[in-house]
Amino acid sequence: MCTSCGCSHGEARVEGGAISHEDSHDHSHSHESSHEHSHAHPHEHSHDAHKHDQGNDIHFGKGAARSHAPGLSQQRMVQIEQSILSKNDQYAAKNRSLFAKQNIFALNLVSSPGSGKTTLLTTTLNALKNSISLGVIEGDQETANDADRIRETGVSAVQVNTGKGCHLDAHMIGHALEKLSFEEQGLLFIENVGNLVCPAGFDLGEAHKVAILSVTEGEDKPLKYPDMFHAADVLLLNKVDLLPYLDFDVELCIENAKKVNPNIEVIRCSATTGEGMQAWYQWLESHRVELFNKQLAPLKVQIAEIEKVLSQKILVQDVIPKKVLSEKVTTGAAH
Image (cartoon, rainbow, N blue to C red; front, side):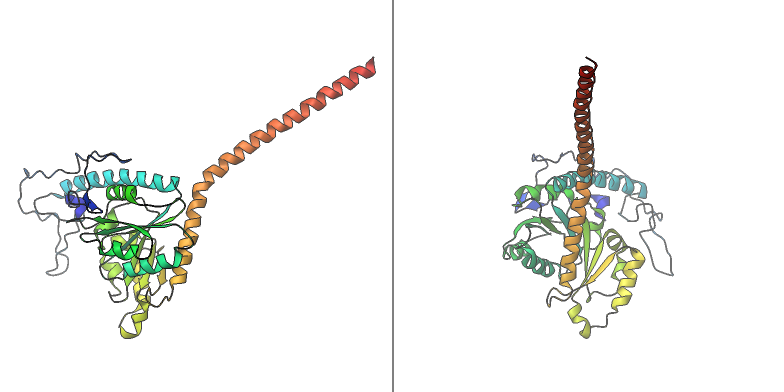
């Protein structure tokens, strides 16, 4: 997994231009500790990282790092992962702060290749573009094909190519945001690289991860790739219009997703026929409003405190003149 080796660094491009670690934007660019590839360690074969669980089956995810890289100990892999994710989390926090400041509702769309993610996205954009400000960051290893499809809808899109990298990271998103023409109080879709493994571990600053699973992929996908479905808040079960032609058990798929993540919401939909898409649009709007209300809550508390102080001052100012007038009347009567 790329959190163990840092494979995504070095070849990423935004709109065809290389991402320089010396570029100046709101993100700090200290990368010294996440690019260590020292090979001075011994390369002896160790059995600590894998287990022979069932007969001849081998599981390489049983070690402390839950992954395997030839020549790296589990301890070293954990150290590298912590270094990479720690820096990514710093960038993600800055992205999230920017989103909050500009009232942007950001979503991270994740799926395997061929799930219909881009078609679902273009259908969504066409349905919503006249009612809310929209923007898209497209992630692929190569080409700008999907970004071009997005732009055909009239929505602003920025293409991020990851080269050999298998996922987007928060640092790439920070650069992409600089090039995205996007109004405040809008909805930002980040279409990640087609991959159900590595994107699960990288926070981009989004409000929610949205997993998209096609009914052509098999009911056991959530069990095969548990990290992704555990990280997602909603599952879009796409291409349901094909169910009459497939041997796919919808209820079993949902049951498997709930085993991994009991709180995951499931929406059955078809981007081609439009079935279930209204439920998806309603989910977007309700969660967008919910997020903004959460962001407004501290401000509302501050306003309430200010109003309380002002009301107390008004009360005091109102009481004092009455008291002074009463004293004058009393004094005049005495004379």
